[in-house]
Image (cartoon, rainbow, N blue to C red; front, top):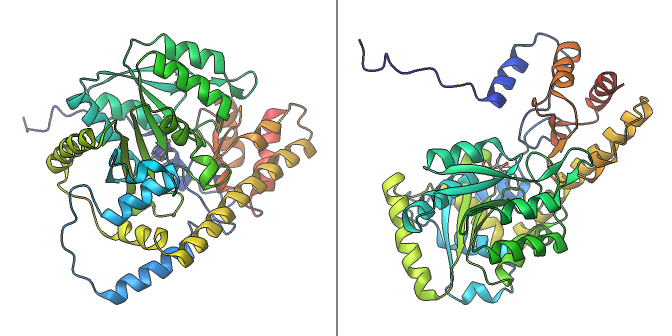
Length: 399
Ligand code: PMP
């Protein structure tokens, strides 16, 4: 018997499985709406102009590749803090913020999960129902019991606020509560300022630990407004963890550019927290990679490139919104009687289309259109070239 003969096959990742099925489909007119990536009008993952300019300057430097500090590149970490909390936030100079560059938003979540497990004795985390599928497995792998709080209301295609508040309140005191700061994945349903304040009140009352996941800042309204939840938690004076990512906003998926930021109570506490966070990093991957962080820092810390990036981010956001309206309009035009205005109201890259598992299966079978079984579709994969095909096929299974 070989060492590895007892190893069982892991369950297939549902989204990767979908990509395989899509690639294997011989039909020429096919659309993959299962992805979690922004595509431009030509169906391509863009290389942003600001990124290209920063990369060209970096290559021209021919810089040596030494190790970064464990917590990453300092100008990157500072730029992350500014984006999250606002350039004029008093917290920036307070010494209470701790930021570590991470391997994408996923890496930030794992760092935070490991840190809270080891240093705060946390064992229970609550995630939204539904949530990004990796939240559950990531926290389970970190040793947590993962439970859910109500979030999405299928009847209204909106938020189940009362359920959410009650669910969070019913958790054992001091639970970790994972919250999507904006552009909720997979539903596209977000909270208003007033709703966030109600959540904050419950979190505070129950001594829970808020862990905010912000992977789509800039895809909702704009960079500032999308950081509202982060800023409200900061203003409320609660200790807080924030996992952020530039994968989407910089279209730098493979560079793994993310960060974990913690809001601590005092500078002295901040120092202790950073020292322990560095141990988590040191024992996992020692220190983060250079290229993506250098590029992002160069853009964020240069006025001209920053302006260029903000414009490009707006282009992506506006295009997605146009596709939302176009899809809803075309569904109506194709005779769909149900109210589809929720598609226009949901935010970020995804829409919870309300399609059932059977309808999703029919879409693939009858029209070569692939979506996640939950009915999640990536609106950012739509363009003028494929939207008629998608709308007509969706209408067919909805009628
Ligand atoms: N959180 C959420 C809600 C996400 O949707 C994603 C990406 N799909 C991530 C975190 C992780 O992002 P990254 O690719 O930067 O690891």
